[in-house]
Image 1 (tube, rainbow, N blue to C red):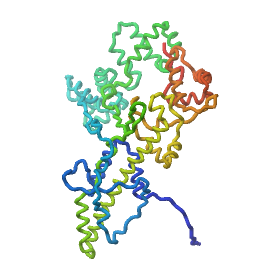
Image 2 (cartoon, rainbow, N blue to C red):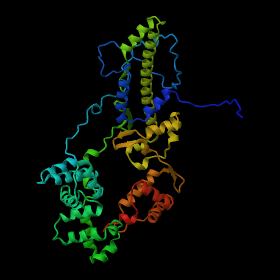
Image 3 (cartoon, helix red, strand yellow):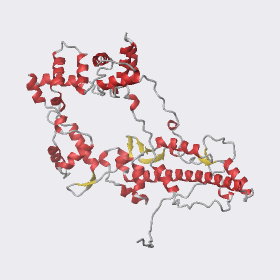
Length: 487
């Protein structure tokens, strides 16, 4: 039997404007331009002030109170509209004009180098061979099946099926293998290998086979690759009958080889270009924080849409089509204002958060010494700027700051506190820095184990468990002692 009940609930819901602000806040500077262009295309009532004719009289939407919580209720379009809400006679500057725009580099386009791709390079080498049509198609199929790192991980029978279905070419397995051997002679060496062992062997075969070290290196790759990767050098010495000096030469020869030959031609194109959101400069011991000018676009409400709304405001309201026109124009104007407000609040939040981080870590930004980093968690900054932790997290996880010591992700300045034996709280960044220095200065023939690193830290006054040392080492992508061993 159904039973009706009456419940009272208190729910917290975000307004569309708050959701828009949250999404914009987590967008990094490098993606902000694309987001603004998308909004400009979708909303004709929004204009880019930097592209507009500066000779035209423009009344801009005034700056909004930064403490505004954006809890706006959706307007009822059946109500009477006032054009005064959209036409402002106050003399306001172009939106975003108050930010530093003297960094011309932010406005320059990044030059793109024209270079031959990895697959185009292989295809050009294939074109130079005197091949019949069948072998040429097999070669094209093999090159097209290579991974980005240069390996052929697709089985030969699958390549035969691909040729039969896509090219209507019937081939034998030996024909594909013979063509694969030809492609494996292409540059860069190691191309077309089916696994790491074959890749290294192909490269060694192109070296001087009269050299005893090369022959021994080939023997290690073919018979003792597993022991080599695990750095069981003692076992390799016994099996090959060589001394430590000879083994060192053999190992060095193998380390010169490229395990991913396909990456060599595209490495430069894969580098990530980071655009910092903030700049911190040191002016005789006084830090100065500026926001990247790309974060302050000159956006404004379209004058033509304002005139259109003014015209509709004075027109007859009883006409159904006129009401629909008023509703459409007002919706676009509201959307434009909300977007400008969200961009404005984004700028204020970014500056407020970064300024709090800079003040908290003032000594670090003056010196660049990791040991000067104080323990700092998201809650410390959230309490300081009186905002939610989630807001600080969105800023820290995707924004970069350029300093005199490099460009860093804001997240890297946050760390947990560790108590020393004297009772002083220090950042775990300081401990990681000491670990890094200890490992960098260790004897590579006898690398320091985690237990030894723990003892060193205790001698310096940091009482930390071995498992914590292992966790920090792994976080810094430093392998265990056995894998750091060198001859």
